Image 1: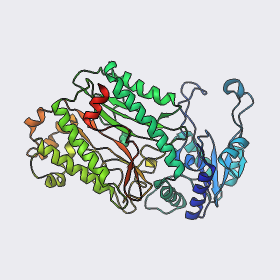
Image 2: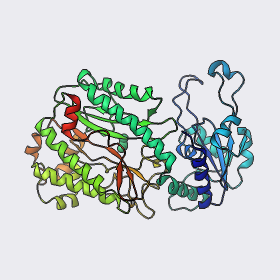
Image 3: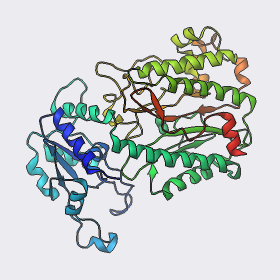
Image 4: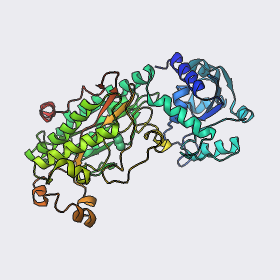
Amino acid sequence: MINIQSLKNRRKKLAQLIDFPIILWSGKAPSRNFRANHYPFRANSHFLYFAGLPLENSAIRLENGNLDLFMDNPHPDSTLWHGETPRREDIALQIGADNEYPMKDLKEQIEGVATVPVQDTFTYQKQREILQRSLCFDEQSEDIDDQLMKAIITLRLVHDEMALTEIKKAVKISVKAHTIAIKSTKKCVTEAQVRAAMESYIMSQNMTCAYNSIVTVNGEVLHNETYNNPLKLGDLLLADVGAETALGWASDITRTWPVNGHFSSSQRDIYDVVLAAHDACIEATKPGVEYREIHLLAAKIMAEGLVNLGILKGDPDTLVEKDAHAIFFPHGIGHLLGLDVHDMEDLGDLAGYQEGRTRSDRFGLKYLRLDRPLKAGMVVTIEPGFYQVPAILNHPKFQEKYYNDVNWDKLKQFSDVRGIRIEDDILVTETGAEILTQNLPTQADEIEEMMS
Ligand code: GLY
Ligand code: MN
């Protein structure tokens, strides 16, 4: 639900951080084969944060906490194709706008305004045309666009009640979608059918997906977006699927389960190592803790577990120092979650990385998307995984570097584990952490029970 007071608070808080006007554009869906056949529209997240509603082809101007809405009323002919749609004055009331104007007036209000570039090229060109300047951002620079981005990050890093209510709504639907998928897998014969079961439930709740679903027996392909494989007894199925509310707030959940309802002993062994890392990381999540340390904790527990299974050899701390764990856990432990699934990644690492910090080029750290001390009100994912990625395991550079750290013969006993990831959405609270996705089981026994 839109909450005008929350929106006004966001606008006021922004005015406390910057002393110049800004314009944010919502964007426009590109056309496909003809002008009126569009790709799905998704409003720009910075626009959504302050405007509240996904209004296509609109802009807002914010100054001193006030919001002016710029959008055109529908053309009279459009009722034939689209029916009656809300008029600008109704929308202005709904979002608590102080004034409302047609789009053509926007160019008279550009003096000294900052903005954030949007993703769609049509609107991006419009932004440049109207503001009559280029729009690149540079982390070192301090022009008004950069100051605006930093101010928006300060606000969006820590969620208010309206945001949390929305994220929890998205989470609830995602939990149910995963539950449906786990329970119906035995009746499905392809990945596509499991995906359909999940997305059809999300759609039935008038939500969309916050990102392209990953539903695959090839869990080692981190962002697999094909669904054509048959489900074979003995396969593990990895589903990374998250709903997004009508107001644009995301959720992001991954579970991995056996197609036939029972983990083999090798699958269960690795699953439990990933789960141990997942549980320890959530346990460690609290204000003040460095997210990078949580990532390194996952690395350590993965290394310990893999040493215990005989897959890695040596001292876990030393293995982590040389990034040997990253052969099997090559990505970061998670990311910020909010209006975007990787929240604010349109700003590069400006949101994910504390000022003054940059990405490491270490194999075990370079895909870490968040490197900040945690604060109450942040929502982050915790998503350790184990993968047998051919591009890593067969690469001469890695084979040579880690020749003595991996028991390559032992690894062959785990050939039925291609990819396992367990991902939950975590709210950092004043005292620790709340697992927003806790209604979806993680224990192997619980998952087998759900499938029986
Ligand atoms: N849900 C996909 C990802 O976090 O990258
Ligand atoms: Mn994620």
